[in-house]
Image (cartoon, rainbow, N blue to C red; front, side, top):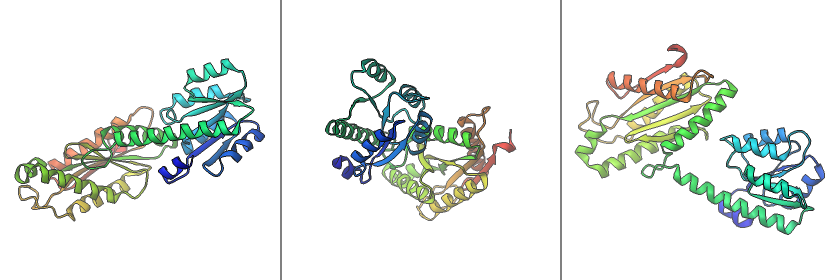
Length: 312
């Protein structure tokens, strides 16, 4: 367990689920020094905890009153937000049917009662290590190789997740699309190596504006970037867009072939919506794209914005 801890620089999050407090206390004693421990004493609480804390591993008792372990596992694996959380079932010795069904539902392993501390710690360590390695690979796969910000796939995943959360909470969600003005001309004049360096600098400048850990900047394609801002109304989205515009201007990257000025600039389109059952995440992206088009048509190097409440 210590190897995992040192590699990640933080304790892994372990959720213990059992309707018998004594069983939870036994497991808590085993892992309290190596893991950040969370506990749930019924299935509903376990589901809520998983959505809230996104644990690195769940130790889940099979037989509980109300929602049993199998049903909890089925729901977790059916939810895109929690389906990648590894689950180890805790079951009575000799319960082969429980094990077969558990594996069919997506469990990664089983622990048999009465618990053998050495075996339990070894199995938990193994699956936490695998989860950590999987997270690293997934993170690399979701980054843009040139700029180091999120890629289009990551943007789509986060937008979908943020949409569902904002729909549940009925709060505003904003999207900003950003385009580097006359970038083809920049590449033609200064060369593609300079163009790559410029995109890296722009990505860094745009990222510096975002202060909340759950706001996301992604390279959307070519010279276009996209930003998803959960729990953000149009007023705040426009403020962020204007700061992004100024952050890029402050780079003072020479662009003598720009029709806007003599430095590299960006055009931005911002759109805001309170998600509903009759709209999708594509709705707000499409509106942000329309606003970006309007910014370009109006002369570039500016922000255009709209709330979907104003156009629907």
